[in-house]
Image 1 (cartoon, rainbow, N blue to C red):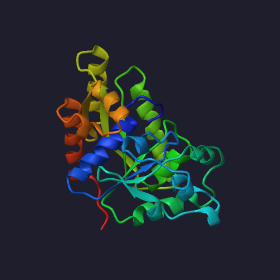
Image 2: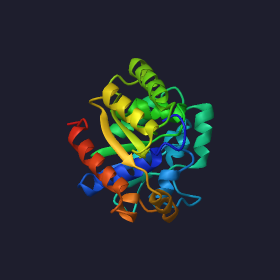
Image 3: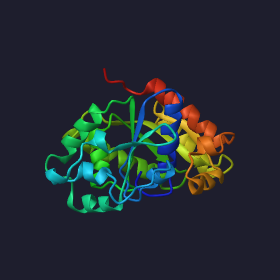
Image 4: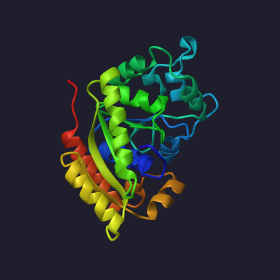
Length: 248
């Protein structure tokens, strides 16, 4: 969650699409100014289109309700598109009531599941997501520093619990881009299984088809459904569907 290349966006896209395939109404909010989730779901933004920047901006007369900013992708997922202008929010913030306003709008969306793809840092936009979330799905790339990064994320979540959102927690953890034949991968997998026993949902296998799917702007689960990684994402989505908290 704190750096790029850990499969965060690939996971957000493919989990969202897999949940939609299960019959759920799913919205994916792209909070990363790089807009990779937006692009990965085939959404093209025109100069006059509304993005998450207009939803989150502090200037009331320029603000757009979250529900009005969602667009339907061709893969069955509603998308709150990102825009590079959101970098301004990272620098200047969402305003004094920005977190609460965004959280309220997320809860009011007429969908079953909201997936939020965050930037690869713990800045303003990630904090906004944590303030609105029930659960965090942490993606861990097998490597020597990844467990430490997960613990740093856990500290940030606890700070959010104390000040902004008491219900949020790291409920789910997966190992991404996983190659089971390496010693490092096996060690990380063992650590996750022992230290995050109830949260650990398993591994997503490494495949070169991820890059192909990204280039084609098609979710991996549809571009290469026969790959082990696609099967992993569908399995994870089914487990998430069974275990996610439900608001009634």
